[in-house]
Image (tube, rainbow, N blue to C red; front, side):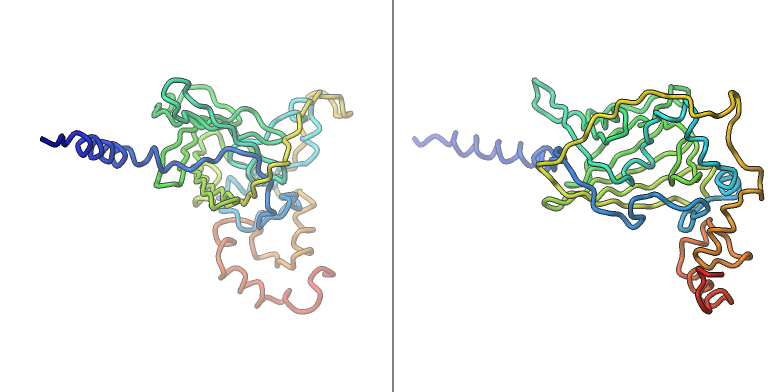
Length: 286
């Protein structure tokens, strides 16, 4: 009598594969990545350039009070970039994977940039800590799979900029991130939601290209005295920031149009600028 054991074993294996399909379909995001310039280029904007950012009134007020000299304070000189911003920078990216030595499963990814702290993305099903837990520049991130796309939820962030000209996200902001890999390209999508400084979710994407010769350099930093008076925190009073006029002249934005906020995200705002008196002639010379 012929044994049907091989058929049973094969069927069992197929069922095991199907029932654990997500484990077999997981994309590997580890590697050395080079940034492909984003829609914001190298992310060194002019002060007052908050176009496309859905800042609410408190968010705009906070941005308008920002003075770039604050970065000369000792406590600011060595600060790392936060999770809501860092993928926008021009530096190399390294993603390392942490593997459980027994199950051989990937239990965390560790992305790092030139100016970052350890920012682990946990994949082992753990929960986020309570609201009163400590906040960090990288926040607290957990990942889950949506097919071959990794979805990341980040909470417990410190207050940090979302654009390096005073536009901020508060320590109550949450970030949802998607990693999408297509061959040698990685798309990084961030959605930032902040009840304090944003009127709507901020959606941005960055592109990276795999580069086996890439390197994330070390970032040693020692704070030094830059001549600022002790106890002085550089800032501008509302309506006293001189650079706000400069940004209007540079881009031809009339005084009755905002330089940031939800309406600047949509095509109607651009059409309004084109139809304004400032749209005639050389706007940069006005």
